[in-house]
Length: 532
Image 1 (cartoon, rainbow, N blue to C red):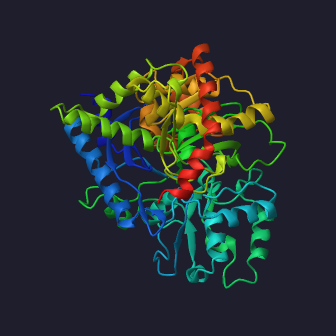
Image 2 (tube, rainbow, N blue to C red; image 1 turned 135 degrees about the vertical axis):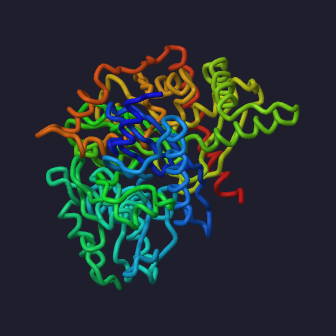
Image 3 (cartoon, rainbow, N blue to C red; image 1 turned 120 degrees about the horizontal axis):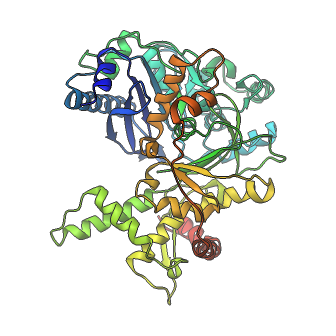
């Protein structure tokens, strides 16, 4: 038994981080050395209802309660004590989307997640007006599209926020947001770490003749930076998180953050000239810039670190969903012969098999587009697998193809930064489920982006650990101590992680695959247009 961990729980000095990801809600408890000491997770899935990708809010609370309960049960099992008090809490969630509430706190329209790409007109008009790339999935795109569609509820909006902002509001009563998450709501001015004033005024002018009775600044959450206090757990909030009543109120919370910001914290990628790549249901690379980009690119999002530094973000809506579906199919096939491999064993065996595949995947091709991909110009998607007549179809090539396909769109976006803006990186820090099987996702990511990829042991804990670190920074930072210094000196120290450099054969193979991938866009477009 870890006596230090037990005492931290007893004394209320442990810190809780919870992240609501696309397929999993995870809670992580960290001790005074910032290492995870207990965790709990709840799996959930988005739903396609009336053409909208959504989650029901009751599922949010069921998942939060289940993950916290499992964490507390693990603490009891490992240390003999449950969680009743904490030093701090942090809440994180998938960025973007549309959560609009009325005067009485009622949800005015179904939660529209980042996965929805029905905002093309709004995003285009806003990008032209602001001379700033406004992606389809941002909250402001969803809001303006609702206005353009003359949706009746928009005039009743009292509060517009993200998933993390919503949960934080219900736990604390505070309508606030971390600057990193805010940068996926509306463009941020890094000079003031808040919504860009000029663009706020431009938006208000755009909607002046609409039925809206509000101004934008009146319905958005207040922006906070890493280290700021963001309220405390209320009695109602404590019961929402822990219906058993064991968890005490008055615990301080850090600003709620998006999964991009927590990924940066979890990989120590918050300083200029650092970068990280998060690979799970969605896929995105975050590059902390030394200077602004020379041009506006529709494929590149400008967001910020949790402390407000400008970040170039390449975001892909699709990553492992197609992979997960095929792995599940192989599991079902195995069960026909009486084999019942565990989920982790199944993934590991199939991912490792991909290393045996031909460098260029043997002539196979796949598209992992369950939803649209703005980077490649698709407003909708259809998962697709194809092969040439002389291709070599075997499990190794098949799995390698789907792993390569998961990274292909990111490659296209990152080439803009490296080729057009001459952004150079010494390494990328990887995290997320794609890297769970040691040496596979990391190796393929390195060859896709032609840069060494490092994965730390803590990477598997992902954003839940990252938001716990941000909560720790709020509660423990020294006078004048920056987030960069806190993470580098106190949390990571000498932990350099394991690094994999690009392999020349893999580089050539991925390049050949990308030629086939780009030529095949017509096939994917035909599938989108003709398959119902």
